[in-house]
Image (cartoon, rainbow, N blue to C red; front, side, top):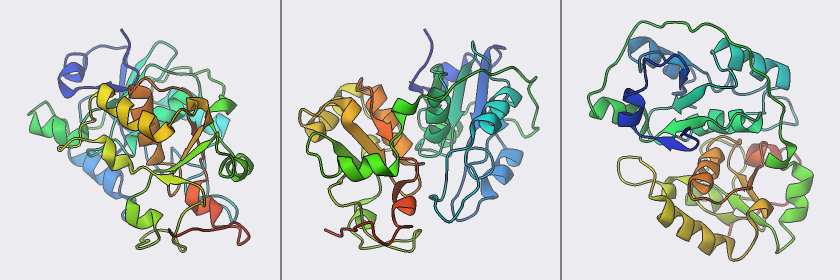
Length: 281
């Protein structure tokens, strides 16, 4: 059975030597973009290659985009191949702990049609706590050929968000911490608040102590309460820049709720246009 949402550290440890498995280290710190690279050079899960959020998993920022635009088709599919991902690969992605960065790559692979990808539950910190093998020498994988096409039904552009926020049959979810949603504290973007009509569901609420994900049944109950009879394919998820919101999409998928869309530009794109309304309550 392929892994399509989460994989435990124990499960991954049993498959490290298998050639069809690709492990990707996504550790990253928004305040220190070089931190993850340095950490990988110190220690990483054996066989892992590194993917940089800014340089690999995002396109260049422009005056009209959010902080982490989706990479273009040719660039990202070429990188998938460089990392050794082919149609039959089982991919496992991880970050420092909660999956909030790794889920961006999880979502990108699914966006291009590769569903055999899972986030390491609990991330690198749990791998270390479980006293599993580490490696400090970076080894490069043999490249593969990756063929994939984007699935437009997995994204929402700003025009759809503008319509959806005014339509009660749609649900727009802000994945950021409550203090950012309410505009009480904004540490990253120049303007505080949220998209009017959106509801707040902090991605961190998907986690148990220790940063592993909650049981699928528990997640399903929490999300069903939030959806309140709306169809999953009429759900749009956003955050500050289209990264940590992927953690909510992962949790929805893990709970068996399929079809929600990502607004890739997210809050950092929304506030580029001074005519877009802003709410703080």
